[in-house]
Amino acid sequence: MQITNCHTHTFTHDHVPDHFAPYLVGLLLQVRWIRRALLFIMRHLDLERHGKFTRYAHILQVSYDCGSQEGVFKLVRSYFPRDTRFVVLPMDMELMNAGKVKESIGLQHAQLGELRDKYPELVIPFAAADARHDDVVENTKRLIEENGFRGIKLYPPIGYHPNDAALRPLYDYAVEHGIPVMTHCSRPASVQYRGEPTEQMRIDPETGGRLSLGREELLTLYTDPDAYVPILDARPTLTICLAHFGGAGDWEGFLDDPWDAGSAAGKQSWLAKIMDMIKSGKYENLYTDISYTVFANEEYVYLLKVLLSDEKVRRRVLFGSDFYVVENAELEERRRAVRMRAVLGEDLFQTIAHDNPRSYLGEA
Image 1: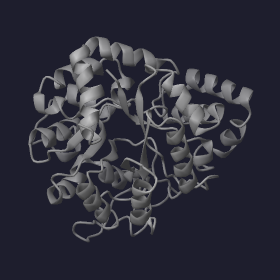
Image 2: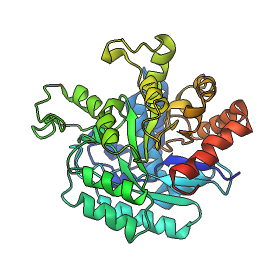
Image 3: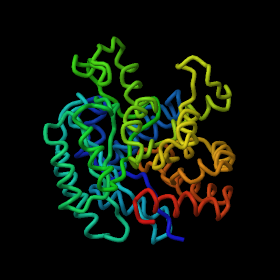
Image 4: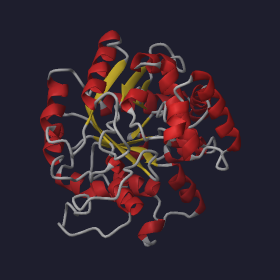
């Protein structure tokens, strides 16, 4: 069985805005021994244990230590069997209002293309698409048609609604050509737009009305599974993965507060929303992945096994880890992946790590 990890990242500190971490921390992280000392201290003093500050520092440490996208790729590759394939998802953070990036998304894409050329059997590159770039449609098509990229990556909480009019031609293109889409779908997003929302961001793409919400509420609205219902209703055959299966917080909420369709919207588990969308049968190419979420708490692998008992859900779940955004220690990803395979058993693991990825990528 050849595993396909459907959700990984290889971006480096050169692709991260210079104000992503507090300014002084960003400067200190550039010194290797200080960087390691700071991370050690933050891991042991962080009151949340795995709070945002610790996760940001860990991301930056890996990106500095590995030095290049190939260096990051070699690290994640070492966690899995040698023939494992990896869907690599670039991150376009240029417009998140957190400062300047040293290397543009164009250069990040070019480097990812070079990585794919060096490991053509193992690296499956997706193209990052941000609705706010004027050339988003043309550039994404070019990456797919001329540079061999295999899919489209969206990250709405960075500052755009997934149903933005600028993205609709891309959805139509994806349907016509069988191109898979991967989009972030968990709350709170680890990477978010940092500034005050603009008036353009506040326009509801469906109604044209103004969304009078705070920044975090607005970005959560962009990320909610419900935001994809109009997109899918208009294109029911669109191949799209709502990544993270709703997120760790919503898995915890699902366990604490059983799904009730009559519950107030704010209390509805995103895990259950995604399951309902899949089980409805309306969207034949709707997928989700377990990246980050199942790695966040070892208990969740048992819930995953129960969820996979439903045949419709089982055929729409993809294996992914979210390396290296996943917050655990360096070797924890490998250990948890092995434990997950042991708990699920070979048949279930093959379904989510081999069969479903091939269907999602249009290979089956």
